[in-house]
Image (cartoon, rainbow, N blue to C red):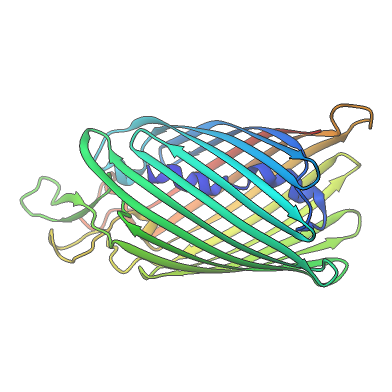
Length: 384
């Protein structure tokens, strides 16, 4: 289901959280440290519950190669509002496995990984290639990346339904140590999707005076291609007393007419030698896709028609808190250090042109939809 893959993107940075906020200035030409992470994540919002574990293992071979493996599970129950309007709730599970390797040569790191994700109605296979290089006394890092994925989309209850999609993503990033306290970064992304790009469970609604509700539903119809571009600017300023403030501004635009922007601000503070606290807030807004409408006037009004709320005009605001306790061990110990980490995030979604058809109201004048979501992440890390 689409909501599952959106949640995966939301939690994609979980495993690196403790490393990022405690590492200080990150140098590209350094292999990741040997470590193991055990994670539990939970999402509650819009009638959907998602939770499950994840295990990450990293181990260096000599001083030039680092191998990694990650196993991730999502257990999903319920259904979002646009699915509940036409179908019943569901229970399913998604598993994801990633194998990766990093290779160090002088001031360069080459990274490669392969990911396999499986649900009962969706299979995805993707590979990633990345290259980072330090310049100018290690004050500048240039990063290049490419990933390609192939999806197989099915539909529960219809064994004859099988569609495919191909996805490619190019990335360019520059990180600059501007002063002894300031690091800045610029990232460009280009994504190209082709094939079956909509969700087989979602429908559009159109006026029908002969229907009991005054309207009927039919399956959405999307274009077979989509190209998107994103530009992000980040900054991290280190303060006295082992604290820092950071921010991100990101803009997005695609060939479907969607334009989005988000701003993120955060503050990191250490307490004593062991505690790290991160407080942050993020605002996101976007315009609707060219072929999106909450209510169409007739069944085949346009060649492309969508009512997925993620293609509507909406905004969300999130506030989050992360706490990490990190303890170094004696040099004679098998393990170098360990940490316990917890994250809580609250998100408010408000839709400007997507209506709650499950609520009372005249056709096309139902209340606008809004909901709150909560995300919890708990994980333990061990370095060795």
